[in-house]
Image 1 (cartoon, rainbow, N blue to C red):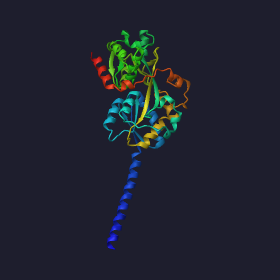
Image 2: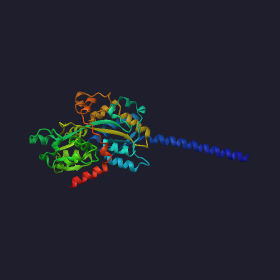
Image 3: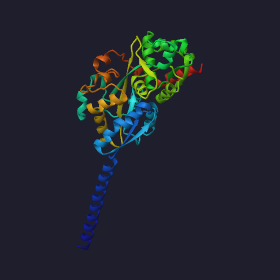
Length: 355
């Protein structure tokens, strides 16, 4: 009898311990989901995200967003190193970082049925493999210093070939791959020279002539803002969102769409596979695709919306790639063949610069 009482007490104690652990686990889960870790850009786009777009999500869900600023391709390397125990929930990236992360298996597949706003997205915003989603688009074009051009009596640049014009020697700034703008530019140049993103030889043949014109070759996009702000940069290729955002701060820059056409430059949201805060990660993507957030993204970041229900006033619609018709006029460059061999591309690019 005494033995049975002891067994009963042990079972009761184990039940209490189990119950306490369950309660503690539930409390830990609730605490865990009070914070989202988001990796995004620096520069003007990053500032707009932090100050104008993300606070709406924080208020809506009563949570805090920890914003990590890092070049997106470097962030992919960080995610790869953390793959066994991810510390980031959502990444805002370019076509390049999205493609590399997808190939490495770092990003979660998104089920459209679990996101009510997916039904309202333009078809181009949803990937066939279900990994990631476009939350904004830019047009890749030419950024130029309007003050310098006016003082020298030059017309606005009108062709991609203007980057090679000797009159700009020492004042052209060029992104390095694996930066997404550089990857898109490399693929576009190959197409314009008679090749393709899978056949880059025509681009490699033309690129060395650009080296003497370069003030510098850069990696972080925020560095280009500094170079235009201080007057060293006169001409570069860049995304429309970054150009417009910098111009809004008073820096004398503008975008010119080359006669050969601009290129579509997508911006992705990717949920990290095994994200530490999965519920908030899904809620964040849902928020960023909502018509309200998309309109705010267009207004503050100058990224074209991917949600068909967004309406923009005439002035704002003229500043961003807006609507399926506009997107159709942009050259869509398949950067996968470049990103799939990005190590070789970067090595050859660096040798070209060194020479």
